[in-house]
Amino acid sequence: MLQYKLFHNWEISFPDDWSAKYDTENGQYIFYPSDSDLTFRLTPFYARKEDQPAPIDIMENAYTNSIPISAKLRDPDSLALEGLHVKAYENKQIQNGKSVYSIHVGYYTVGNLLSINIFGTYKPECEQALCHLKTIKFSS
Image 1 (cartoon, rainbow, N blue to C red):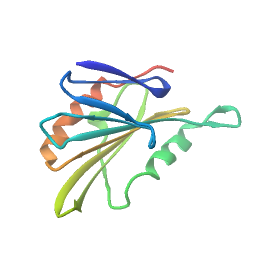
Image 2: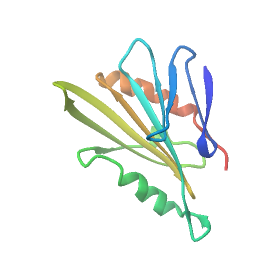
Image 3: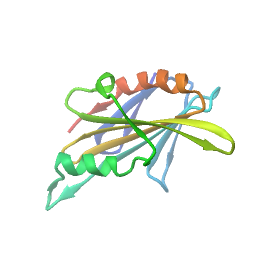
C-alpha cells in the first residue's frame, strides 16, 4: 500500500499498483486500478469564517450541497472514523447508455472537509472499495 498526503492534512492509502494523479483544474486527487473502471475522486477543503475555522454545520452544508439531487442517503456507521463526522450517499445514473454507480462520502470537522466520490459500473466493486476509506487519517 502507498500512503498519499493530500492538501489540508488528509492522508489515504491505496494499493501499490493503482494509478494516482492530481487534477489541478478541479483540485481533485484521482486514484484508480488499471484493471477496472473504478475511480476515486477526493477533494480536500479548508474554510474559514471571520478568521476562525468554519463551524461544523457550515462544513456539513458545503458537503451536502455538492451531492446530486437524485442521490439517496446511506447509513454512514460502517464508514465512521474517530474524531470526524461523516455523511454518505449513493446514486445510480445512466451515462452513454451504461449504468454508473456512485458512492459519495464526506468526512468533516471544524474548518475541514474531505469529499470522496467513488464511481464504477459494478455496485459490488464500489461497495468493496469502501475498505480504502478506513486508511484515511486527518491531523489538525
